[in-house]
Length: 355
Image (cartoon, rainbow, N blue to C red; front, side, top):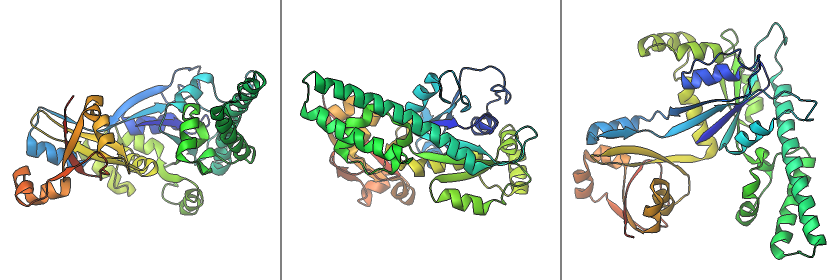
């Protein structure tokens, strides 16, 4: 899973990035001349993985991971008539979701916060990027028609591109446009920015943290949203577990920023976790809700999907209840599932295959 952190300069993106990843990136880096994004891969905390590891005592225990990308601030460039650089657009296109960080504290230079206006400005830039891409694609389709290449495939593409352009011209993101599976296949290569799931991180300070429910409710009608006290969370991430617990209790925070954002990301993207277990390795894998045992096999390795025979399956809850795989089998909780079985969160799979 890849999440792109974006926002206006001074929104506290890099502070939030540090809080999420325990990195120590200079939070003034973007105020100076900086072209490269900050990248970090963080494990997804899941108590189930640790309990499975205690049970199987494997050589390796591997958590699912999230790649965090801290992008350069969205700042208008008159030379390009755009606020998004080509590099930023490329990075954004390759993410699974966007996390928009908005400032919710007074700044000596920027003055009082205006989260709603900041969100609107960034969404506008994403809309402009998608508009430019779709208008360019429509021009190329029309040129193909002029050359006598009016194929059914191009006509289908033209139809969905025009629908998307109408949506964007009405200042509405593509994620709110009903799109069929067939249409989705046609536009998959576009990687439209406003089609990506958008989460909002309301970056408050220690003074006003927890006092913004009205604002959270208003934004929450349109987006998945979470509130951080960014600087506090960054400092918290650098403490040992005992000190962290004490400060979190004082602040009324029950989970780390990373764990809260992870949970929100899984919910926003509608992801689940399944597991593979054994003496060599216990591992968590991420899958889209509704995907099948065949999809899960392909997530583990393409050979497993190519030679799929069946999946031996039982749930994490059944394993904990029965105490062992032997107990699962004795109580008839082990199932043999075909390739069309819809994997459930917490399933433990052993893929049988032959090539």
